[in-house]
Length: 111
Image (cartoon, rainbow, N blue to C red; front, top):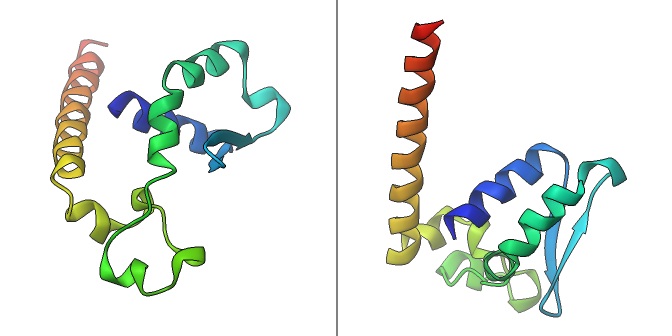
């Protein structure tokens, strides 16, 4: 799941929009943005991406807007905070970010 989250972040930074319609992953992107290598990476984590964009947020605020306008869990901090699995993923991502930041600082000091 973490690989899918990181890839989602990369895709967003490149202007690629992802969504799930009828269980199928769809994207909206400039033609040049999705290289064969990037398409391969998407295919490798397709199931996780579909899950990320399929889970509706169960929090009371999101549930109150009605089923047709319900927010995807990925985009609701309250919904993520209420789920232990998502909280564990967040901690793991934070730890990876910290490690990457330390490595970047060390590499910068070596220059």
